[in-house]
Image 1 (cartoon, rainbow, N blue to C red):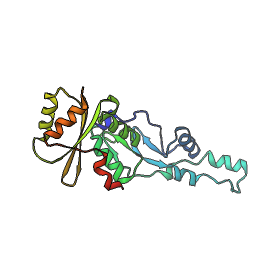
Image 2 (image 1 turned 90 degrees about the vertical axis):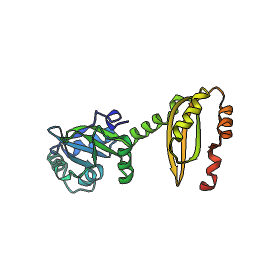
Image 3 (image 1 turned 180 degrees about the vertical axis):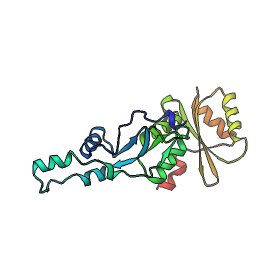
Image 4 (image 1 turned 30 degrees about the vertical axis):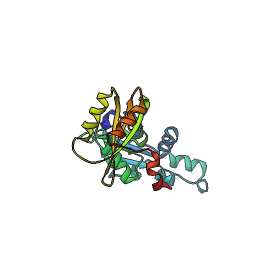
Length: 217
């Protein structure tokens, strides 16, 4: 899956000349923590909610109502724009984008093309939706995890066994724990008990939650 297939193309944006009060209102309406600053189609940076709130006059201000209204009609986000925002392109693999979000503890990433023109935004929520899709959860079926040593041809070997048993593979995933490899399949099978029994007889180790109980005890 690529970022371009999961991103939101309709992203609220502002310019550096946007009034602070308007930016604050947009954040409230769309429940945003940042607003992307775009000029001539190109991403210039972003404005954070905490900066907006810090720039707005507090309730304890000594300004008169007239002075306050005048001030709010002139204050723009220009001085609040932050640069250096991490970005990805539509061609970026979704797992690469997810790692950036995880490593930097971000809410999401702006998506730009090679000329830095804004194409959209991909959030943590969108990435989680892709994970659910790739794991095949909504397809139903039966989930089975097999713990094996990592070796060449293993996936083909198990897939062939499933084929011979008439088992339809809906999705596959691979996880590593040290030297061990965990193959997770979501399958559609007429007899899941027979499937587990055959795998065990062939020497494969089924890894259910009980396999990891000591790790979270």
